[in-house]
Image 1: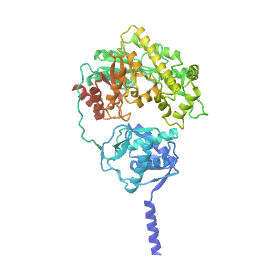
Image 2 (image 1 turned 90 degrees about the horizontal axis):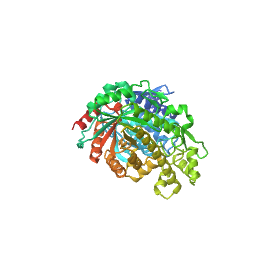
Image 3 (image 1 turned 45 degrees about the horizontal axis):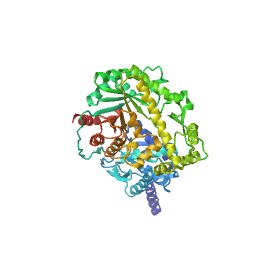
Length: 554
């Protein structure tokens, strides 16, 4: 009897040491909740997270294992749309003894996430200790990240699956603060080669109007001056469609319509140039009044229906919207003493959008095989698309219909820029016309360039002919690149723009540490750029501001 009792006790102890399990659908929701929670906390990890519907909380150590195991099981067959596991084990993990900083940006492709999670979950099952660094493939190249960074990446990946029923193409590596109970991240010593500026370097910064509202217009503009900037790119109309001046034209205004006037006044006082920054092809306020103007997207299946965008305007079709934008620009040019007009989102969002009956009708009138174009687009960007087919066919330069379609979209973008340029010139004001451009269009890599032409229709040569300044948005870590990539984009841009056009490089000032930001600034200088524009004032940390002073103070 005593032997039986001892066996029973041993059985209970052993059973308590076995991993508990969670339903796979509950883990799916937990990933979404965790990603949201981290963002609510300002990119900081909590010590624990509740599992929705399971009346259970997981430590961040447990959550790391559970998410890696969930994704390993979800991607067991290696397909982008996997199968939600019925159950996921939970094991007790040990906190890391130390964390040594790894990659602060880049991306892990969806299939590499599967491989990583399969390998990592197996390692954790053998040794449940979280190491100081974790090996990953960052844009297909060997790299390292800390566990806190990986937790945020995995949570966002699972959130994407929860919202879209399939894996994202990739997940970005973004810095976060580890849980309070974890050790602080140790930063390895990094030596950065300083590159001095050339005379007349333009030092710009993008600023949202609501940031000025929160910080205080005069206080923020003065700080921008003290940091060493020469130019302010002030958002005056964003994706929402709201403006920050008392417009007679705009359909909606932000709560404080004194922002533009006060910013211009303070910028002049501080001897800064100020550019009115307009989001061009997106406008939710306009769509609220004119829902018929929403951009058309391809069906996700060949038997499906065309989609409509939530914020993007079918600008090639809607001449009234183009006139609306031009009227807003002229209003600012006439009544406010700005130094320039800065264009953003003057492009198609992706190749899957811009398929209105009007566009398709134009293609048909030009003799293009519309069925072939649409089927190829669905094969590329539909539910079962590979993301590459349309781009590969364009790059081969032997499919007339594909190339003519892409050319038509490029011409649409060019004609809009031409109209805006004429509207600016009609004011009689000598204003700097500039544009923020997706970086792939200036990349010396022909694959990246083809990607940009198909998706965005932003032909750099057009902007280099029509604008005074062009600003490729070379946020290197956001695009999974090293800082030296900025040099390649500058070279590609310089080859196609007109002589005398200034090329400024867009520098990442978000989800990045000061070291990487300095690397980007010095890479732009090494390339010979006419200047840099940092995105953005509202995301700069105190550490970043000190780095900027270092770079600009020289």
